[in-house]
Amino acid sequence: MKTAITEMFGIQHPIIQGGMHYVGFAEMAAAVSNAGGLGIITGLTQKTPADLANEIARCKDMTDKPFGVNITILPTLTPPDYPAIVKAVIEGGVKVVETAGRNPSELLPPLKDAGIKVIHKCTSVRHSLKAQEIGCDAVSVDGFECGGHPGEDDIPNFILLPRAADELEIPFVSSGGMADGRSLVASLAMGAQGMNMGTRFIATQEAPVHENVKKAIVAASELDTRLVMRPLRNTERVMTNAAVERLIEKEKRLGDDLKFEDIIDEVAGVYPSIMMEGDMDKGAWSCGMVAGLINDIPTCQELIDGIMSEAETILARMNGQMSA
Ligand SMILES: Cc1cc2nc3c(=O)[nH]c(=O)nc-3n(C[C@H](O)[C@H](O)[C@H](O)COP(=O)(O)O)c2cc1C
Image (cartoon, rainbow, N blue to C red; front, side):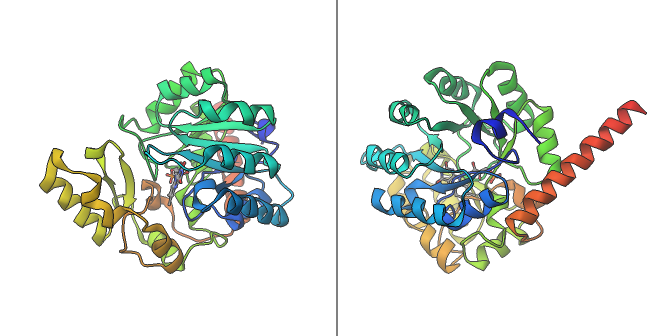
């Protein structure tokens, strides 16, 4: 299937694996890219720009297909060394960058000068338009369903995607709640040129995370995520667990007085224990409502091939129904 996104990124299928903290290592990105999608290494999971350069080199050893790097721009007083991260990406010969979080305008000039395509992931039409205005090549439109940070507007993809299609001139992919061929066809119907998936890619054979994480996603239903940190305007959709219930109890008790320090045990630095050691109650970890649609742990090739063949079957069936 050819779309503006497959052409822009030089990939076979219009499917992207979004950056994921402590999931988006070289193994994950290479497996998705080798299966014909666009795999993405999560830049900030690497402790230093030198480590990121090494991770990019490892990925290149595992695939000769295009892959990307996610650069998440955090709302923090002591930011990571973004210029050095951008330098590692450029010198590593990476062709695509997924930005997320705050406005990426300061990162764009060196990336564009190096001929790198930038897809900005954001959760609203106004931020999508801003991304277009500052020169991003594409947008990943992340609806309220998504795992991770859905923003504060709470607009689900059935509204957000057609709204984006009505306003944007640059191509965009759907993100949040995407799992299968039905998701892809629906995304195309709503004006997207492809789809981005996070949670679905964690439950794959190659995802370099503990088996407990994959099993938790397969076991979960669409009712098992919670929104946390809304009082801090840093809302995150996470899988519910003992730590999340404790966190929510603190949010209820402290109300508007809640500060980050109050929930630091539940949210700060918990990813290595969860993703690497499978300590599932250690803290809050991002997970989408789409867990309710995930019932298996295929290889990335099986997953992507299955999505494409299901999408093609649906399109052929719809075509037949309409011409009947
Ligand atoms: C465990 C996990 C970690 C994530 N970490 C990041 C991150 O570091 N940076 C980022 O831009 N998005 C991150 N995301 C969001 C994903 O890239 C993607 O936008 C989201 O998962 C899409 O929603 P879905 O899970 O319903 O597919 C994360 C998502 C998950 C599930």
